Length: 539
Image (cartoon, rainbow, N blue to C red; front, top):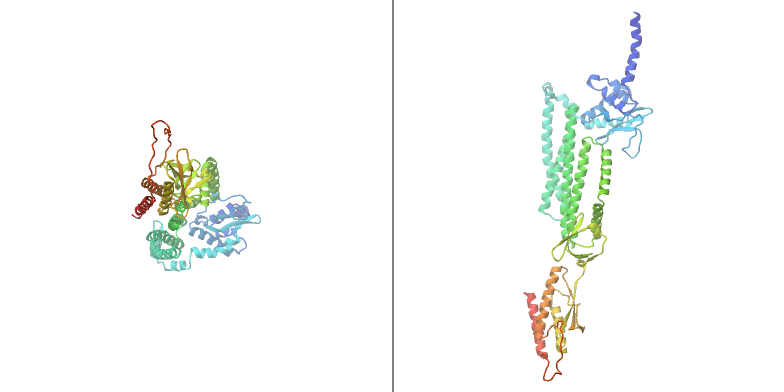
């Protein structure tokens, strides 16, 4: 009897000791563990789980605690308690301010978190106030009615899953497929309308790309529909965890696909706009921007996928920053060239197919890449100039000239009569005026001086075309016409020579060329040469 009385006295003390051991809300880890542990089937004690909620009557606290777990289970959010900090003074560093709180799932469910009140940790007042709305979002109003409509046979289990859940899942997939088809047509119609409003054209190639863009958008809507209604099937936490992981992976992949297609559409439209501009440097910018934005979308998408697989975002960003810094230090020349590329596209010192002089390199710009610019010289060899160097040196862009200037001196023999010199100058002037590729309002043809071996006639002319090849062809026609003029007039071009005077030697006479200076013949020759020259261009 005495021992029995001692047991009655000590039993409450053992119960209090057990509560003090098992119910622990002294840190974030202890609070979350206490909440989830006492709502498991083998340790179900909702009164103890409700102690993680402050300021509510026990009955209401129990309902709130149960709904918090149901929301987490319904969204497939598995809480890894080993990752929860045990520091009683843990501070949140996710938001703009730092204070004592811990968010269980910052990305997927930021509304549910614990915070320190006094020297204890409880579920936050925000969590308690929002849990009803969260519960209704996860388990809509029709869930309870659906449970009442399920017959007894529907609760038969196959592989641990009830029959009605199998049927509901198949119906959900079917509805998701029909929504996918409907949204695909609507998305294409909307995208095409927006495109036509912006570009004012109906390009078939754009329509093809828009259809490709509408496909992943409709898939996203279908996946969102399944994501919204799947918790209504009330699968267990293990099934929900894997299903929602797959759904989130699918959504991320589809978003990557959407942005990749969006980049393709935008770059296609920008490419069409660039083709209409005068310069071709914009055309070269299209593939560079496409590669840049494609890489950016893929990198961000991979970061998102790694976060879904449990990789800590802060650690990943810190590693990427350190790695990026190390790569930048190891490849300073590459970074300098990239900056040089940006400066070239901002300043636009030249365009594609411009003829430039950059230091010792003279040639036509063929391509501007991330690292270097390709310049093809007149002998068809290709020079690769680093963009960092190209952005610093002096560039003479002959492609930006209004006209191409050509200046040369024609040397006539010293014994050419003044009449033929005048006739030759007059004929060259008329040839330049008749030339369709030269400026007839701005040229000079003058007898400018006496050279060592010739009388110098300066020809200064401007060609209209800026293309190097057309300029050479125009020179060729001009030269041929001048040669024909000289031949018709009987004028000879001089070359370096030495003349020995022998007129004073007995019975020796010098060679004297005879020139025909008849004015009528001269005018006839000039008219004939210019007429034939004009006919050549007209043909």
